[in-house]
Length: 95
Image (cartoon, rainbow, N blue to C red; front, side, top):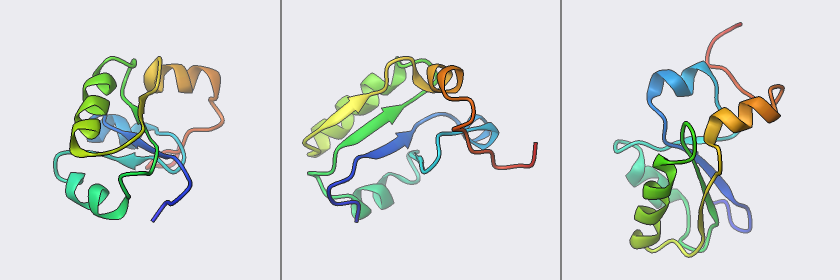
């Protein structure tokens, strides 16, 4: 459990996630949703990241409807993160 710590979820497609994601991000998909909900308490703060910060709003709303207390959409999404913190990106392959 991630009690007392916010969890960052990335809802981008698998290829985009593999090409670069925020360190420690959970890749949230329809297939991984049940595992995410099993492993994270409803009082765990959740930050949702997408490409530009638009799709994450809908995903954040969905998680709120599922019972999570504090869910936030990351403004600017991964594009903004990569622009501001280029050294803070993990890759699924060697660059």
